Length: 158
Image 1: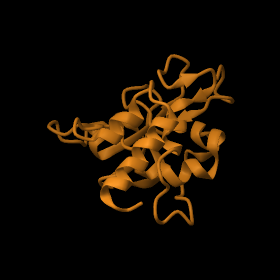
Image 2 (image 1 turned 180 degrees about the vertical axis):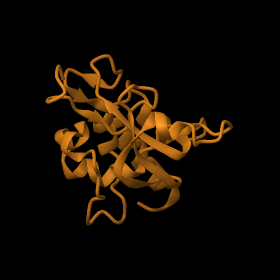
Image 3 (image 1 turned 90 degrees about the vertical axis):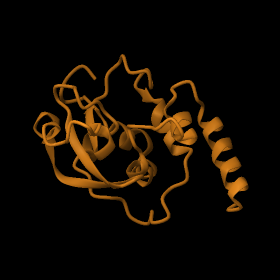
Image 4 (image 1 turned 60 degrees about the horizontal axis):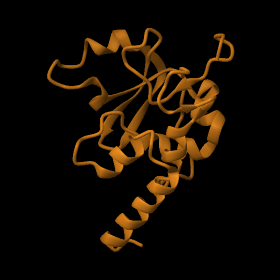
């Protein structure tokens, strides 16, 4: 994490970081269309209308930093919580991603991270109970799994 050679990237990064790039576009809620090549966030932010939060339509990647609330040493606890979510129905293949060679989630969880990555949103609405649970650094992966199981039971999909 001390040099560019060992720096990993967060696929749920901050738009305002100097190195931030656009990872993809939220074409529909919960689905990400990955860009073939990175675009600097500073170039894309001006294209988003003022009344729309950039993270509602774009997903950003930036360097993983030691001060992140989701880090424990070199480990990303957000990825642990995301991994507790069910994989997408179409998870036979992984999306093409320019970030993968340096992605923290890939290095930590491999293909399992890629199966869930397109579902991740960085703007969570107040009424999104599961999204708020997953985004909270104090939540454990076990709590996410219980919430997913309870939601499936309530909807009759279990």
